[in-house]
Length: 114
Image (cartoon, rainbow, N blue to C red):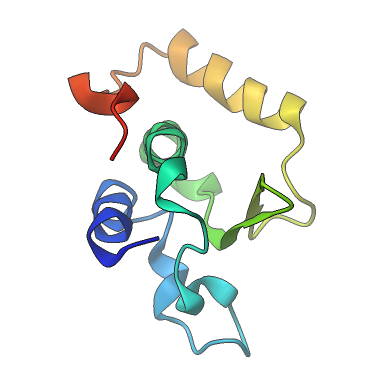
C-alpha cells in the first residue's frame, strides 16, 4: 500500500497499529507495513475505525494488529490474540460497538476508489 494511504490507516488506528514500532520481524510483522494493494484502503479504513472504536471502549482488552496483508486476493488481518479473527468474532465486535452507540466517523468518500 502506498505510504500516504498507509499513514491514514495508522492515524485512524493509533492503538490498533501501535505494534508497528516493535523490532521487525523478531516481535511483530507490522514493521513491514500494510501489505495490501491500494484498492483495499476503503475496507481497511472501515475495519480500522471499528476496531479502534472497540479499543476506545475496552482499553483493557485492546486489539492490536500484528500483520495486515493480502494472500491469494484475500485479506489476512492477524491480531495479537491467540488465534485469528473468524467472521463471528469480528461480527461480535461490530455488534457490540453498535449496541454501545459508538459513533464511527465514516467519511463520505469511503466508497471512492483511491
